[in-house]
Length: 465
Image (cartoon, rainbow, N blue to C red; front, top):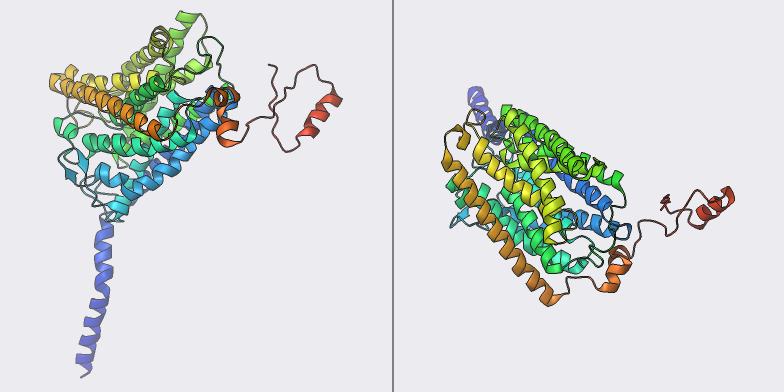
């Protein structure tokens, strides 16, 4: 009898231990190091959007700084909700016709702690989804550089939701989704040359053309009001970009290390080439030029980061810096469009060059899962890259045009002349970044104290202008 009781007890212990055994088997498929790396990478990419707010906010006039930063900041909230509800499912869900994902993962249904072998077999599915969320956030935020200082906030909110759903989500599925048609074509985009940069740059250009030029554009100076902010933002973008590109390896491995190295190298090379081009063209190197050049190099290396060598990254950065400078300093001036903060000049043009460069410099010695480019004897890759570029241009341009026309039918997209003259900070949000007075060296100590006493809780903008 004692033996029977012991046997029953043992059987019960085995039964109760089965869930634990099953959980342990599932958990063993998750690599702790890869998961930690991807959580950190996701956080780095998230930081890029507040960094972009500083980068763009410093370049606008002081009456529009808050509205410009608000656009980047509110996008974090909007897309975070849209992505969980349906955006992720449309972008990465089970394929429908090689064009769009299904709605099987609505509300993150089925997106849990277990890995998804189709995308990342060593990290929880949720972590992969959140990493991709950060890309979905920053992409529409990049567009705001083209529409700065003249788009009304209600229209901006509607445009953002529609653009993310109609343009970004399908495009992400084409390029990265299982059975997406561009992915099946064999085109390579490691971290978003087409999905992020070309789409946002082209969409920004179309939006700038539809909105029209800012009042006084080309007739009065529209200089950056706070370049230190812009440089701080550029530094945060450079820092966060390591998560953007290295994280796209989806594991803490040698490929992530290579992506990290080439990302930094291309940014540095482009900063140098932009400054040199500017120096030769205008006679003086500028800090804004150095910051813009670094961003151009980061954009250019993005699609190639997991496929090229460090020497190729130098070439990509050097050429990217010059091309983007010419796009910003020459092409825009000659054609006369008002791409306010050069979203197309840096992201559209830089992303285009990066996608082409991937077709030239990619090598399977860096990533066996990729392909050799033209310089390694495979012209087919360059052909696939060009097809993906043309498709992205057409889709983003036509889609953005239609979305803006639809939004404008329901709510005015362009600020009125009075709203623009007063600034969008006060007319759209009822806020001001700075107290409306100027401190100069002519103020006496007593006058200075009086000015401070007038607004004890408001930060002072000390300026000599």
